[in-house]
Amino acid sequence: MSMQASDFIRPENAVLDLSAPTKAKVIEAIAKKAAAVLGIPDGVILEALLRRENLGSTGVGEGVAIPHAPIPGLVRPMGWLARLRKTVDFESIDGLPVDVVLVLLTPADQQKDHLNALACVARRLRCQEVLQGIRAAKSTEQLYAALTREA
Image (cartoon, rainbow, N blue to C red; front, side, top):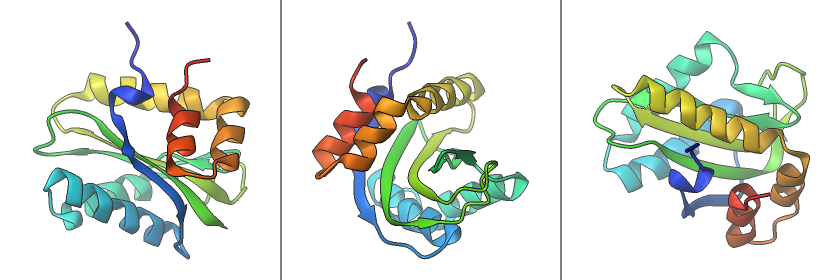
């Protein structure tokens, strides 16, 4: 059975109109939200995400970025979906600025889960219908529904 976005992204982990001026600030803002939920210091999460980002941009194109990292002490994959108030340069592969960011955190010892979860969200965020729904959302509920609705 394939993984669904709703397996690791909760409705309360959807963020509408996140305001941050740079890629690093976007990642930092979501790391703080994640830390509050997970009880893991935000510095640990931020450092892991930035370390991954330094290997190469997680801007996958079409205005979407999927920053991701394994986090020690995490027991299951967790994700946060944010629509940005203003686009941010993410050094994406297609050069387009980003307005949809999905941060994925996975247990450090479960590489397979990491890849499955990543493939799952990448698939969802490649779907034009999903992206249109995310960009049109007027509430966090609509934002969450756009990502998790089964086509």
